[in-house]
Each structure stands twice: as C-alpha cells, then as structure tokens.
Amino acid sequence: MTNLKIDIGCGSSKRKGFIGIDIIPLNGVDIVHDLSKFPYPFESNTVGEIWMDNVLEHLEKPLRVIEEIYRICEDKAEITISVPYFRSSYATIDPTHLNFFGVNWFNYFDPTHIFCQKYQYSKAHFRVKKIEFDREWKGNMSFTHKKLVKFAEKHLSFYEIRLSHIFPLNSLTFHLEVVKNDNK
Image 1: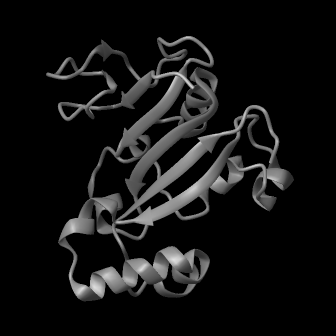
Image 2: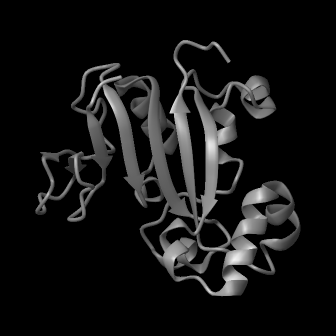
C-alpha cells in the first residue's frame, strides 16, 4: 500500500499528512484542480487513502467522481467520505448542494450487496466497511443524541425507513475499501 494520501476538496482545513486538492488556491491546498474536470491529476492505482469531507454533495456528477476515485486508488485503499444526511436540514439549506445521500448510497458499489449485483451501475467497487452518523458531533453530543446515533448505526435500514423522518440526524460518513482484486 502506498503512502499517497489525498484530501479531496480540502479547502483551508487539509488533514495532516495528506495532499490537499481544491478548486480554490487557499492555504493548505497543494493542487488546484476543478473536481468536475476529469481525469484528476493522479496516476491510476497510486493512492492509498482518500478523505473527502462534505464535498460530494456539491459535485454535478457524483457517479463520475466515485469512478475517478476508484481509478486513482490502489486495491484495498481506504476511503472516507462524509456528506449531509438527506433528512438533515443541512442537506437542503445550502443552495450549492446538488446531491442527497441515504445509508444505502454506496451499496450500489459494494460487490457483496444485492444492489450492486442487480444494477451494476459502475465497474467501480468498494466495500462498505462502516457507516457513521454525525461523526463531527461525536465529542459534543447530548445523552439522547448519543443513544439515537448508536441505535441508527446498529439498525441502519430500520432507522432510515421508520424513524429518520421523526428524529433526523445530520450527516453520514462512509468508510470504504477499494475492491480491485475481488477476493471477497
């Protein structure tokens, strides 16, 4: 596994040890690049880790972005993507948000999931390792919020279908692993 780590859409808060890429040349941005322009300025199969925090909801072609991330990553690369949860008011108040995300969004890329097997929207494959709600709030949650997050993370589909419209959480963080040599 390579040591190449990329913070895609880092803005001015690039993660330590990562190469920052953003469209705006802010402090911390190492590579200025429009994420809606393909290909991204990285060789295929060279990236070992990607962090993408509240970026994917702003991009016009999320499927193409995910395929580009897949192209530049090596097998078993770690990907962390945070997005607003579709039930959250944060998802809908920002006029620059173009996409909305629920708990099953990345299952269309997970070769072990029926959605991926049935629909085959893309050749880009990722294993969904873990899904977190409200990651950025974890150090500052009320007792009730903590209990709701714990329940939602344990019962993803039940929470989304039966409870999320009553008790909406704010964000989703997907922890993924790139699958290029599918050994399941």
